[in-house]
Amino acid sequence: METLIKNISQHVRLSPEEISGFKNLWTEKTLEKGEFLLRNGDICRYDNYVVSGALKAFCINPENGNEEILFLAIDDWWATDIHSFSRQKASMYNIQAIEKTTLLQISYSSFQKLLQEIPSLERYFRIILEGYLGTLEKRIVFNNMYKAEQKYLYFLESYPDIAAKVPQYLIASYLGVSAEFISRIKKKKNKSS
Image (cartoon, rainbow, N blue to C red; front, top):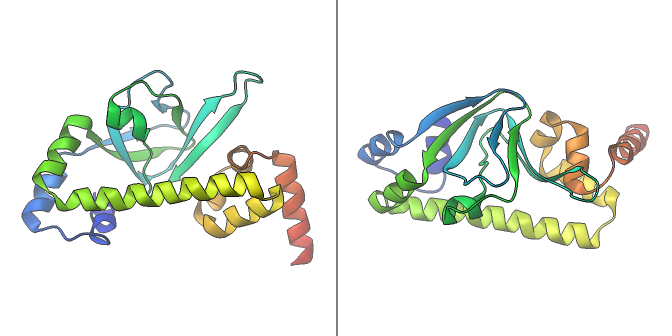
């Protein structure tokens, strides 16, 4: 819980009473490697903050059966289908643990109560969503305008913690390239170092 409070305090100030009320609305959940947090077709009932571990969000490509990685989440990140959670509608994708993962979860109704009782958290979650939207916009631009090597090098520079923690084949899927291509870039990069 302390990492989440620290994350929030970087953006908004909460009183001790607000922190106490805030803590009461969250529950801890642990997922084992391979366990699903959310499955395609289910409603996302919880907003999920990653305390430790790593998750992948993905769809299955109906043409080839491959996983298409939508996002990766590690420590101090959020892992939620925002559309499904905010609308309480069926999810279009899956979220699965890629290693043992500990989460803090808040239910939809508790989340709504939280925002009503602690108005400054509206600002915090707006800041989080703006950051997420900015990341999505950058991803669209990079996918449409840059070559695979540039996308990979940008990913390494922007997300070194994810690159260090997540298997290469998942990063390749996220970037829309093959794992073999990333291996070639890494070899080339190692030779020039």
